[in-house]
Image (cartoon, rainbow, N blue to C red; front, side, top):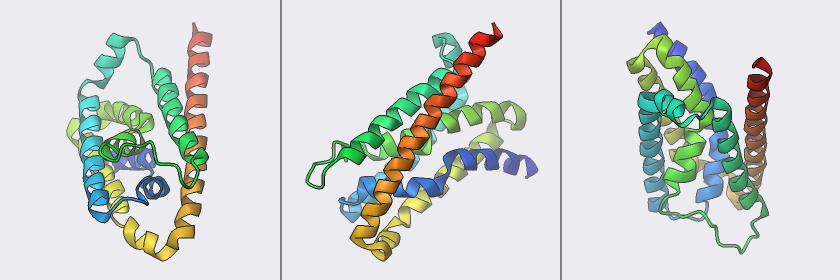
Length: 197
């Protein structure tokens, strides 16, 4: 059981389910309840499949393609920044460019729930704690994020329209900042790799 918690906690910090709630509210504020529930299920299923498949073949795939952790961080950060920028610059009457049919898969499932931070964390934990323990820790954390999404309706009702809009914009700014941080860490890793040669 100790091994489980040692694997669970780093992944918990990487997923950071609480911080995902403003992004979820931002993307789903205008959707009907049934669509929101389907989006939650889609995000949980997508995140789980991607995380498990990446854990199974991630290291080998990255090595074959010549992709480093730094490359992964920069690409993921760039994608998140584009999403955040689009949301921040969107006017009130602008129709969202996010496809509601695939919203749960992208960007909620990937890269918000399961992004570069989670994927790289799991790759580092698996050799230490084993495949089964790491997968169990991943699935538990993804379900926690899904639970946070599921409870967003009463939270939205409590906050009201203006509160939701405020949280959404704050979430967009935080998302942009997280994206910049990921790109920065990726660049630092690249510089360190070249300096070590």
